[in-house]
Image (cartoon, rainbow, N blue to C red):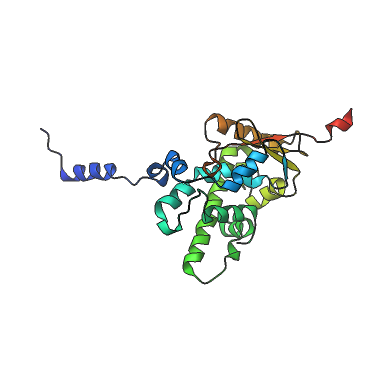
Amino acid sequence: MVLLPDCIKHSKQEKEKAIKTACEILDEKTILQTRRVNRHFELVCKKMQTHQCHVCDPGPFILTPFVNDLGIVQSFETHDPVKLHGKEITNLALLNVFRILVGFIIENELKDLVHSYNLDEIYGKDHERIEFELYCVMVARLAYEHFLRTLGGNYLNRQDGNKLTLATLRDKLFEKRNCTIHQDVKKDLVITVLDSQNNKFITDIENMLDQLKKKGKNKVLWWNNRSIILKSKNQFDFLKC
């Protein structure tokens, strides 16, 4: 029998007791069994099987799988007070993160946080409320950085050395777009951009989402693991005949 020094024993015990992430502690199957998807969302999806809806801001839909990847639902369920837990998977933190991503009130690093994430709009004197808002800002930033790194190419490493900021992305993709959204036979949400056929930026995002879906990474827990699909076409093609 070989006796191990105390330092090695402690090191081995520490590894065995390594801190697990919220995603490891609480898996998706358990959440879907104990929490429900928003009922109104399910009703809208059912309607979108037969009727397309028009949207002018596809950006939040496209970023949703990247927010999902951060484990915000698992973290909320694992670490927040039980009294804040509801019957639905969605929560206040998720709502706040998407409010920030869209650009509602809340590049050097600080300048981008102010310009893209409205860091200077945090209001109130309650330190817990301010801390919660800062947490949501950082989750929104991490989700966008995750999206940007996955998209890669010139969007992440531009010739001038700067990355594509969230504020710029809003101008290019989020705002004043002519899009439709419907649910396909696989219950995935399909966004069709009607005025951007052959647009390289849209095509690159479309291909990225397709690749993520093949890897099982394009899914959203609070959408009952639906994927987001992006397509584009010219709505005036029929006039060229």
